[in-house]
Length: 111
Length: 234
Image (tube, rainbow over all chains, first blue to last red; front, top):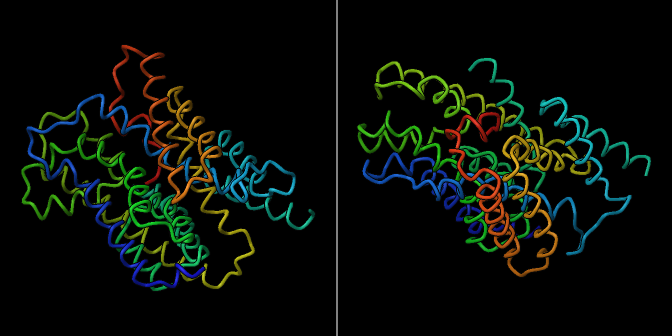
């Protein structure tokens, strides 16, 4: 937990993250009108966010100690699978989160 | 806009709780919410910050997650390009998922750009969005500080991100890209400095682009914000 009390690290990280927000959201508002987004580039950009988020979530849910972790006691995995199913059916974030939390808590208490 | 406020509230609350549960102190979490103001990027970088990942990796991850905003900016720039620099910066900062989706749904096809009606609508939505988000985030930060960490509330961050990924991955190329990213993430999880993350994203994007060229060679891309992101939050 040491890094989370390292103020210099965190404040630098947050400053950089703010710059990233401003640069991406403001990008084409700042560029001259003659500069446009080529279609090929736009295609690639369209897929990057979903892939980046998947790359963040995967190690948390599917691995432990740098190895694939498909086991009965990986409660997070079952909770995420149940929540994903609910979201696909209901399209309701609140309901899916409640179901995911409930599955996780039930497994933790019973398991 | 008003019917969407509860959705923003839930999302802000989850992000606030997740930040504190990941180990951020309350002052730092407040600093993040008032400056970064980008929920998915905040949630995505949390595990990296918690692990003390190198700063360039943290920033590049946020950049990748935020690349969709570049498309939004390109698609809605016509209304804003004639404004003074400072106002363009402010409008850009406020041009998140929801504001963009509503704005382009309403004014995407109009002939005249930059009318007072458009600015009124944009800043009205953006203001409500900002306020609902900040109130909910601060509430989440304070609540998360009270709750014990073993309640599985950090699972909330993972679930919230899954709820963002699914609406983005509706068509075949995006699904293929996400699946490849997941597999690569497992295979590369041991790489130093979290480089596996970048490798996996590159592989996923590459496969998605190739899949699009293969499956939908001549279909024009749908207007940004109406297809892949219309349902997504921030």
